[in-house]
Amino acid sequence: MNIIDAIDDPLVFAKHFRGDTWGAWRVFLCALFGLPMSDAAQLQLYRKHTGRSSPPSAPLHEGWLICGRRSGKSVMLACIAVFLAAFRDWRPFLGPGEIGTIMIIAADRKQSRVIMRYCLGLLRAVPMLKQLIEAQTAESITLRNRVVIEVHTASFRSTRGYTIVAGLLDEVSFWPVDESSSSPDVEVLNAIRPGMSTIPGAMLLCASSPYARRGALWDAPQALWQGWRSYSGVAGGDAGDECGCAAEHHRRGGGGGSGAGGGGVVCAVSQRRRELRQPRGSGGLREPRCT
Image 1 (spheres, rainbow, N blue to C red):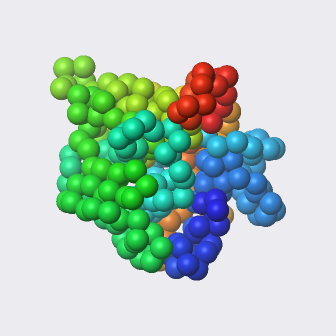
Image 2 (tube, rainbow, N blue to C red):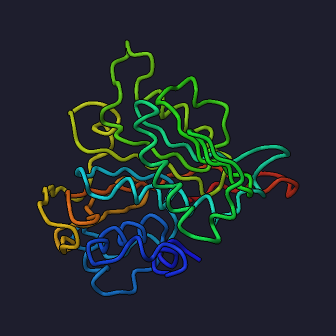
């Protein structure tokens, strides 16, 4: 089951993503996970906002999203986190006693709990996923498949030492950027990426509403899709025609998406080459490839 199947399945996430306003987010998910866009409207939307004729054919490793407030980015990030936690088997890449961590990182723990609450709500709303929950605290959800979803503060010190299968960085444009800061945003990213380097299919998603012309989000390579627009639509309204998503190989593209009716979205996704190791016991390293 891929993530589009999951959000269309009445037994999984379908009831949470009803309506046409999630259409552009579906294009984003197809691009992020390298899924085919067989629907002509999806392909047209993708081409409109990327200038590319063919969408990615393989999953991407890193995504940058510039999203308006109330655009649905938090619930979408939570959906991706739960999908990666529950529908992917990371155990072949984990050593004895090793736990795969999905990190939810924000400027402080209270802000991180927004996505964490969505994750918990999605897990509890699906009976078969609810059975995966082994333990729960205010800052973590431990699953029975050796994956834990945890809240973390944006710190390059406290995020080290983990095996990271996914990192969800929330409101990254509001993180400290000065070198004099105790944890500049760039240093947090530099601390997270090595924790993902040995896990095939690990994802780093950085999402934020726009703020200032500085910091890691501003320094990200220029997006192909330059449009930006704020929406004042009501819940259930169709904003999909004004939104898009971009994905391209080896550099970032841009686009937009719409959540449950508010806020414009600009999405940027990048693909990077990494050296990946084989599952434990298989011997040796894989040839570098895109993930």
